[in-house]
Amino acid sequence: MTISINDAGHVANLARLDLSAQELATYTEQLNQILAYAQELNKLNTDQVEPTYHSIETGTILREDKVIDFPNQAGLLQNGPDVSGTSFVVPRIL
Amino acid sequence: MQHLTLKELQKKLRGGETTAVEAAQKVFTQIQKHEPVVKAYLQTFEKDALEQAQKADELLRSTNGAAADKQPLLGIPLAIKDNMNLLNTETTCASKILKGYISPYTATAVQKLQAAGAVIVGKTNLDEFAMGSSTENSAFQQTTNPWDRARVPGGSSGGAAAAVAADECFGCLGSDTGGSIRQPASFCGVVGLKPTYGLVSRYGLVAFASSLDQIGPLAKTVADAALILNVIAGYDEQDSTSVKQPVKDYTEFLDRDIKGQKIAVIKELLGDGIDDAVRQTIQTALDGLRKQGAIIEEIAMPSFKYALAAYYLVATSEASANLARFDGVRFGHRSKNARDMLELFKKSRAEGFGAEVKRRIMLGTYALSAGYYDAYYLKAQKVRTVIKQDYNKAFARYDAVLSPTSPSVAFKFGEKVNDPLSMYLSDIATIPVNLAGLPGISVPCGTAGDAVSGTVGDAVSGATGGLPVGLQLVAGEFAEQKLLQIAAAVERGSRFERIRL
Image 1 (tube, each protein chain N blue to C red):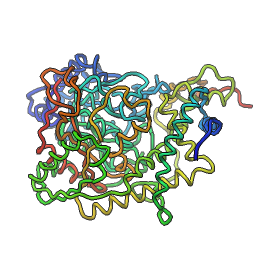
Image 2: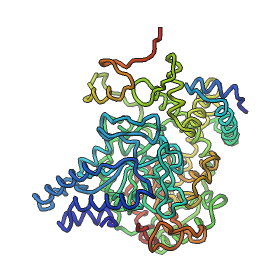
Image 3: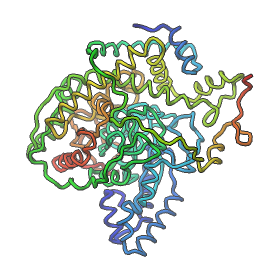
């Protein structure tokens, strides 16, 4: 399975990355190398194997759905690139 | 004084033989002297550190040293990797996208160091977002290996390993997703411990691959690593993946002999693809373990040849999701050239992330995208199960499994940076451990004299011989005590001397 430069463009869009033509060409080539290497995995039969999503089995962790205020709201807001009051300003959406 | 181990400094502070201020001053003198070449730190906190050291001294004096019973790291200068939040300090992950980001809180592991009295001297360099094996992917500076300035310190915790090796701190917290604590520890001749997944809280660590990431210490000795683990281990309700475990003293078994302990050498990691000099140094270390009464046998881990591919699918998939939060809206770099919301996301990310991070986001996004999920991500997670099964079989018969930490000693700058796959291959021995969530440690076991060029020691006075070789031990889930016990035996049995800059 190989990916084309168009596939890479589609993936870049999904990943919200504005890549240059040069970057797209490089990544297409490198991703193909890595994916070719990943084909190795098909040599291992895993039909009867369950996936491991968590290396250490802890089961599903549940907590009470309770709102707790973060103690340093000012510290969060100071990192905003464009802040108005307690809101983050972004370009017009509608 | 800066050359002392953490344990030695602890004793001198407690006994009133030295002061925390003196220790901190010595560390900053060392930093001033060697940072122009080593470049391990992205930032240091001299004024704050000296103030904290002064407070530590007052406590030690007024209690006749007894304050150190409650605060075992009282007055000890330590560092942290710059992907952990420390309140009101910059946390950059060595990425342009986080330049100027001020931590609004302190990571739990760092907070535990502070509560134990440690003096945080600075934050160390890394591969951008901990993605890399040489620290060359830092957006800000190249850290050099204290053993040879023409070589990389390893990565991603390269700054941490270099800072410890250069005696620019008495220990450092790193993070390990596929070997990022152990491989740089190996390259720089220090001890690096990746605890069992869930033993140390990840709250406040900037996430790379959530099912693999773990915080652990880089230290001058095995005992020092155990002393730091004692402080940072434990359940944290802020990290739901941290595990409730009874409190243990990880120094408890360090002095015990290893007579009758069964250690398996992984056949696949001592054959093709492993440098001769590394193999020879490991063989010598094995002799040392046999002399101490350990039973050494060889085993096969047939699934390991699939580990690297599985890892790069799992880790990049998780990274592509975790790094979606860097969108230029609430924090981090925002592009000035965006006309609408979509452009704001795409341009901010494209301008802020470096090449390796983009490459991994691309791979991960592809692996998770419609039509490919089963073929790549799901397949990789199934392979992960098989790797775990191989380990389980091994631990049914053995106390630990052993291999080199890395197939080579520290390589030169530029050698692998343009060939992602060859860079990834340098993590071949460490990656299976993260996939299985197990504890692993790299211990320096000697130097590989034959493998290196004549540049060794050019930054060093009085050092001779080659570059350090790390030996990796892996034990079962939460078997850190036993892991450290055997690691201490490796240390005792090896003729290895830390570098002295």
